[in-house]
Length: 250
Image (cartoon, rainbow, N blue to C red; front, side):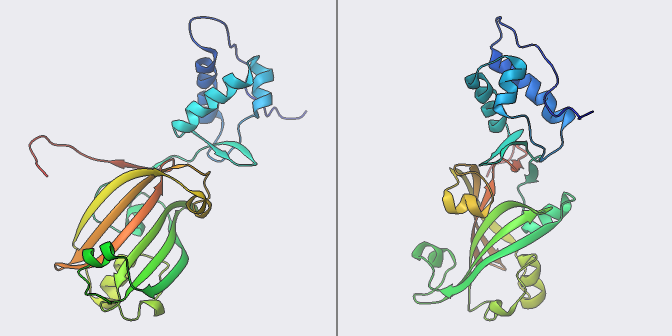
């Protein structure tokens, strides 16, 4: 007997509750109880046939769960149960440290390391004199093999003269401390959101327009700026936790 691969039978009825909301409940059950992360859900046509609903109803239900981060679309392949979001508390730590604390295995895909003159705003943030050179390091950061973030950082060459000879596949903060005696002890960070363009989406193996959490961090060691980094995290795989206290001011 061929195993059943479609959704479990269910009733989508006319009534005060919209059909797309009823189907959303059905798909939520499939994603949370019957299928693990990365498993495909039935196709739109299968859902239409099984539950007797229109394509518009199916798409609205799926759109809701994609927005909620429970499902994810992969262009040309279908819709799949999404991986749970990695949650982080705002604190000063490297990506590798952050992932290991959550029981995940961090890894790095090096895209480029170039030496050149940084943009004016970067040079200003790093307190660099006119004409001074800096390393531009671009990497994709992964957790358990899944792309989570795209990092683009600038580092003064005067501080790290031979960075191009180092292994950049692990924690950069650990490398700075072990190889250069530079311990990052303070950072100023700004957060905003944007949608992934074509290049960013491709590097993060995500659909175009995937929501991103973008962090700009200026880090210092003993009062000296050593890092200007912009990190773009997949919003469907990463979330931030913040504790708020009305008795503490910024």
